[in-house]
Amino acid sequence: MNEAFDLRGKRVFVAGHRGMVGSAIVRRLAAEDCEILTVARSELDLLDQAGVRRWMADHRPDAVVMAAAKVGGILANDRLPVDFLHENLVVQTNVMESAFRSEVQKLLFLGSSCIYPKFAPQPIPEDALLTGPLEPTNEWYAIAKIAGLKLCQAYRRQHGVDYISAMPTNLYGQGDNFDLDSSHVIPALMRKAHEAKQAGRKSLQVWGSGKPMREFLYVDDAADALVFLLKNYSGDSHVNVGTGEDITIAELAATVASVVGSDATITFDPTKPDGTPRKLLDVSRLFATGWRPRYSLRSGLEQTYAWFLRHIEAGQVRLSAPES
Ligand code: GFB
Image 1 (spheres, protein in one colour):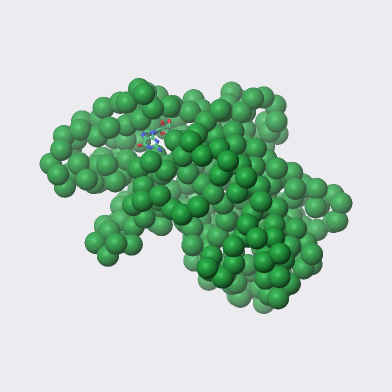
Image 2: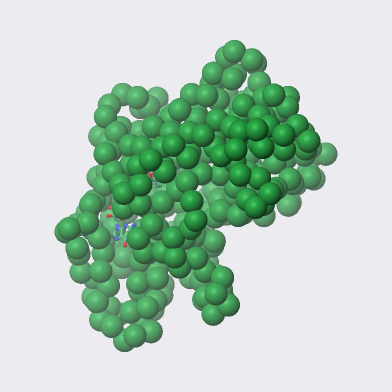
């Protein structure tokens, strides 16, 4: 890692600050001596190019963290291809182009581990990008994210600005989406286990075969790694962000049930897709800097469930599909 970007006294715009990742980045940046800029969706629609240009010109941040995205689990990706491709392309392009016009020198773009080919070597190194076909359930999202990281490279090459990108593995934690149709696997299983426990039900249904393997990173660890990269990384290549460890979905379901305190029996629904068989990131580039996650999967799940219990009664857990 080279070229430190000193955050002291800087104005940092976090796009997507209401989302799970954006809000974790805002929490993490609060420990830095910088000014955090955010804007409510009611004030600025990131799909509106003229509005984004105007906002950026008026506020002139020094750095931008691009955490705004249309995200969702395997089924939402499969069912809403236009939303995942079009919204992400437009929003990320608007933010990057407006940032450049307003002379933003440092920008961090967030992608996803689904940018890699379905049958990439495991663990997946950064240079496996574009070496094979994508996983069909999320190719729309993946194409948008690949375009985003390429746009960062293009800005670097053509204009010499320090736009970088990070590819986090599957993330989870407080502020996640717990809507069963559009969520990722951890919030879905946590909610199902919680509701089974409350209703005294003895079955916990898991989509697919339970055999796919996934790597999970707690969102506060992700935010810590992302702020670390913002401060310390400058380079053409995207950087993988993960833990370097994965487990099967069946093992995950058993762990979630244990954290929730549910003794339900796990059943599998083969009508639902498995998605990519495995996507363990090669995190040697990130780990070479000395950065490490602080939360084990179990402790991250415990944190998440504690947050869920604290917020569910107050109606502060997202239980239905987020507006697009
Ligand atoms: O988290 P998930 O939806 O996303 O699913 P992906 C991970 C695995 O968990 C799949 C299984 O094999 C699912 O079939 N699974 C089991 C469940 N039970 C459930 C359940 O109740 N809900 C859900 N959602 N899954 C997404 C991509 O892929 O990962 C995105 O679609 C993005 O584009 C994101 O990259 C990080 O890991 O399969």
